[in-house]
Image (tube, rainbow, N blue to C red; front, side):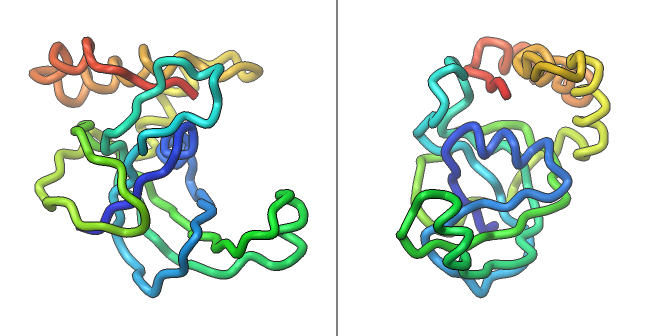
Length: 162
């Protein structure tokens, strides 16, 4: 299966978004399923303990387009960049992945936990609507519900916050 590593918190955001646009440095002709992995970088120091170097969800890569000059100006960048549109995330049982750039291949033997809808429903139970919930507890809840035999192994692993 094709995979991509994103810095955090973008990988976590892709898991809870219905549609997510990721800024990539390269264009791609590939369309289809892609495993979203947390890379080895956390861009937001406030999210201490965020999950790094792990597979997180499978999305559909629907489009890749060059960012317009206006979009680049808004972001404060002059680098060429592309917007990859991802949708339909399905949460996976996390497993270690070495951070890489661009699309790369991973074994296709992936265990799913649940759909984005199940994740969002659980997410809303942990949020007061004004602040982001503690996704460590949320992820443990989902693991206990969908993969009870593995939840004990994952409780000691680094989790992510959004």
